[in-house]
Amino acid sequence: MRLSRLARQITTYRLKAASEGERPVLIEHPRQAGWSLATPNPSHVELTADAYRIPVTLNHNKQNNVIVTLDRPLEETIRLLELADDRLSVLVASNELEPPVKKALGELASRRQALGRQNAELDKLKEQRRQLIEDEKRLRDNLAAVGHDTALYKQTLDKLGESEATITTLSTAIEKGTAEIEEARKQLQDFVSNLTL
Image 1 (cartoon, rainbow, N blue to C red):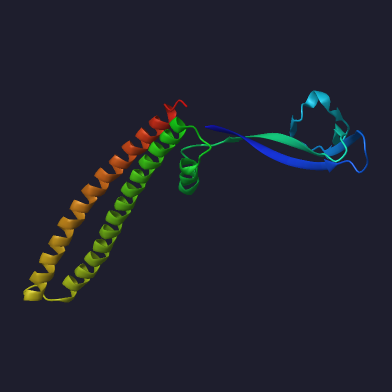
Image 2 (cartoon, rainbow, N blue to C red):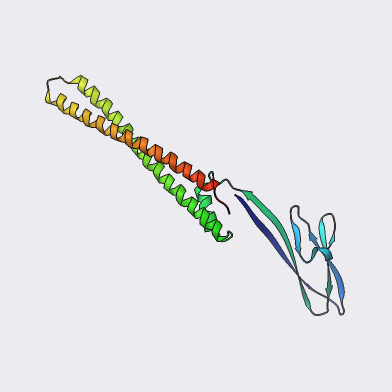
């Protein structure tokens, strides 16, 4: 997405003649690289290497206000899929964008938040599985340490079986979650690719 903005710099000169009659005055306003004169009319202004020379006629006992406006176009290319969430939130909340653009960026933010929640849930499942695998190692060590004919052996073996079943369930959920995330990423990419603003 290309975001075009206009930076504007406004300077007001307040002038008053010290004596009677009309007096011509030249205001030399500094030129800045990348900025262009918007007001007063550039065709009535003389250019030097480093200044705009603005002619003004002062009348006795009358204050003249001369407003000099410089504009600078700012263009920014934004990669929507790589945009940080906080920057996206700023754009959505901005009053500088047209309503259809804000709506599209709001939808993008919503989809990215949903994807973030899916990733957080997947990470949670992976952490649970990792903890169960660690517990399973402890249970296997306990099985090796106790006699085969004891109640503790049977109890530890049952816990190991429960742990295996839970790990299998979590692994299935992780596979499903990973597939859903990949599909959500593809849908997000398709959404961004098909945006016309």
